[in-house]
Length: 408
Image 1 (cartoon, helix red, strand yellow):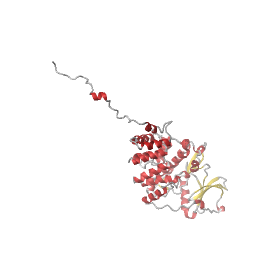
Image 2: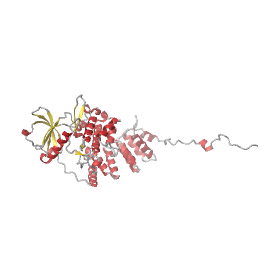
Image 3: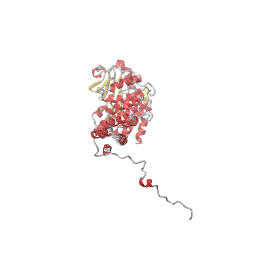
Image 4: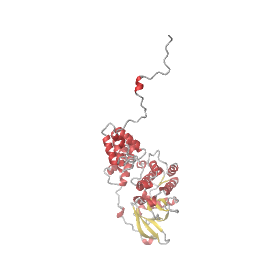
């Protein structure tokens, strides 16, 4: 009898024949309730109230982690309803996963989401970013519970001086001798802390102008001259033209923007004037790029300082206005408007074009939120996210924003 040799293809052990190996990529099974919850973004899926109830039930079961992981994955494809987003983020915080909670909250700018994001940022030690986030809340509604208290507390932590008491501009009057101002005032169109703007007619030339009258010309003469000189130096596409200035009497005559301020058009959801946004928003970005290339930082980029006028071919054009607090790059940063100041500027950074880029991103967010699906282009939503994102990845100036748009 010859020597024994093993068979060429030995049969597998009995246990391998009985239990096939599971694929590492195989997803764990889902209960019908979890499957229903994770269909929230699909046609025929649960409405927000039902989804909230399903999530609340899942939190009492071992499937809580499965439900939350699924919602996080869904949010990367399509934003969830605001209340569901906040509820899921709160559950993630309770589980100790603050990074996932922040990522989920960044998919929506609903007020409740901003409040939780601000708290997470403050708890992580990024008080400047928390301040910028809570200012977005206050910009919408000063009476959101807890918002002003947080703002005061975080300002103190940053060592910022208290804001001066706000004087209601509606109580201010402007006295300017009509004989020395060659304009007929037609109607008031805007009023703010520095001055009031009228639609006016130039008596000598017969043209319509925007006449800005400072409330306190004796006190603000230097700012008035600065506003006029910077705008004149930057004259060109996308910057409002200054026709004349009288610092003693406290007025500037500016080119008339017959469509009004972007702020008012967004509040009215004026789609006829603002859609498509590709017709006028690139021009605004281009104007900001020119400002930055000339070595200036505007420092007050917000919807109230973007003026809209009819263009040559029917499409509107946007003009950047109000250079009263513009500064050279590297100079100390002045205070800015609530909700449009970058975290880095709040932390004391000198004037930097990235601060204007942050304000631009906030403007785009307001436009898209105000116009809804009529102006919801993925290109602009992604650009806004980049402009308001971390400082080290934010476009460095207006030209970089234009380059980013060209790649999308």
